Image 1 (tube, rainbow, N blue to C red):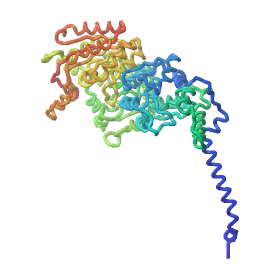
Image 2: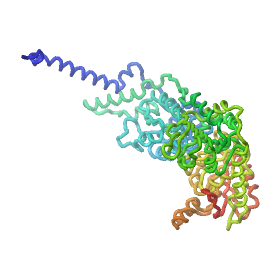
Image 3: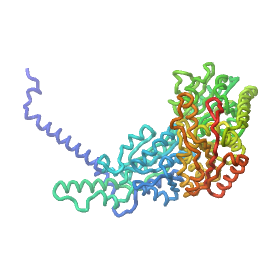
Image 4: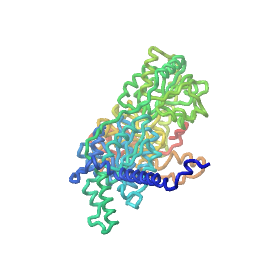
Amino acid sequence: METPAAAAPAGSLFPSFLLLACGTLVAALLGAAHRLGLFYQLLHKVDKASVRHGGENVAAVLRAHGVRFIFTLVGGHISPLLVACEKLGIRVVDTRHEVTAVFAADAMARLSGTVGVVAVTAGPGLTNTVTAVKNAQVAQSPVLLLGGAASTLLQNRGALQAVDQLSLFRPLCKFCASVRRVREIVPTLRAAMAAAQSGTPGPVFVELPIDVLYPYFMVQKEMVPAKPRKGLVGRVVSWYLENYLANLFAGAWEPQPEGPLPLDIPQASPQQVQRCVEILSRAKRPLMVLGSQALLTPKSADKLRAAVETLGVPCFLGGMARGLLGRNHPLHIRENRSAALKKADVIVLAGTVCDFRLSYGRVLSHSSKIIIVNRNREDMLLNSDVFWKPQEAVQGDVGSFVLKLVEGLQGQTWAPDWVEELREADRQKEQTFREKAAMPVAQHLNPVRVLQLVEETLPDNSILVVDGGDFVGTAAHLVQPRGPLRWLDPGAFGTLGVGAGFALGAKLCQPDAEVWCLFGDGAFGYSLIEFDTFVRHKIPVMALVGNDAGWTQISREQVLSLGSNVACGLAYTDYHKAAMGLGARGLLLSRENEDQVVKVLHDAQQQCRDGHPVVVNILIGRTDFRDGSIAV
């Protein structure tokens, strides 16, 4: 017996098929019209006579977010946004290498609590920034990288300096986007700025193709042929290009919100804070390790310092937290951290990660109760499945957590003998350095003695920028920042070459501060040319170069373990003369004037105060002193 469907004549299926085909065609046409922007253009017109350009939209968003400086190395892809920034009062600071521009933006972000902004041209300009962007990612610095790009129409067609930039930066940045139309500039930048500061801060990347930055008439001249091809194909191509251009600029100058979007910053719950209060209240030998995340809100630094003093728990300070308690504070323990961690019964890791710096957690005693707080859950629990276990893991803002912890522990005190025990180790280490400072060296100056004199000379309003290995590693023991946010090092990525960029950003951010840069001679090679930048922009900073004619931190271990000094040798180069050739001031410290170290430092200070960048070339001896992992 036949079913009704089987009995239906075949011809009756044709109308259904025709209806389906027509529906599919209409849907395809509507989709194509949407992609071509035809519907959008019905409501949003193009002002073909306007001389405005997308760079003005970029500058307007930056100004609305309080950005005062943009760092760059100029290129034709990004010229409109630089010109627009200058017109709106945003200072454009151009460097001699793109990596320096990113480091400067990084320092600006760390010290100001806002997003540091850098703009570089397409292709090589962007690839030159990769190291600095990775450093900002590891250091959790909110940096906005604006990158030029080939025209949207010419991408993947062999354009000059074209490369798949988004693929390069997605592993390095929290947010990556390519602007395809002028009207997208404002919302894309607002989203990028919010992403840079929300959650765990970090770098973000926005690609700005050249045709979304330049004015309509200039893009039209490049995009649409003056004499279109004849024939049907020519008319179709001409229509497509005209429509593409119209969609590029449709709605470009319509008013849009330009100000900051709300930020998403995780906070510890009251229940978590209370559990941590109870754990810490029962401690006999508590210890706190504060990392950079504690200072992500620089304006709260004074409140955080007061809270740590009120809490009364001895602490180690690392990264941007160095200097939080000022110089020689009784709660600040500086030496023998591993031994102290083994003795503590409760440890608060506030923005500190159990990576190589804490031997992946192996320095933590299994009998200690560990409280860890971090904005980033992955960082917070790093290696916790292998070498250590937290008693309480709190995902939230570190600074506000510490403030709440102190509120819950008001009136709590701990036995003073615990702090005194830890400080005795500091005093022993200080005596060791005094003995090393008195040791003779074969030639040149004793680096320990030089750094002791730097410590005695350093003013209270100084910011220390450190960039190097052996000389800087020793300085970390001997030279103390005078207050919060007065120490800038690369962070956990251990990048050489940050010095000039960090100094540039620091001086612009805090113009009344004296910026002292401590360089190894190897690291100084990355930064020397930027003294041209300092001179041109009238940025007075002071560089102290510990010149021992080699990559000594590497050489010492390489020779010992492998018996060769290959690739580790440098020369006692006249870096001070090279700086003078760039227009800066240069001074020399050597065995011939070793009794005048303080005078030379004061001379350098005075020249900086007079507005001149200065390089002090300090010839130091290669010594055999050893101090744990730090060799001098």
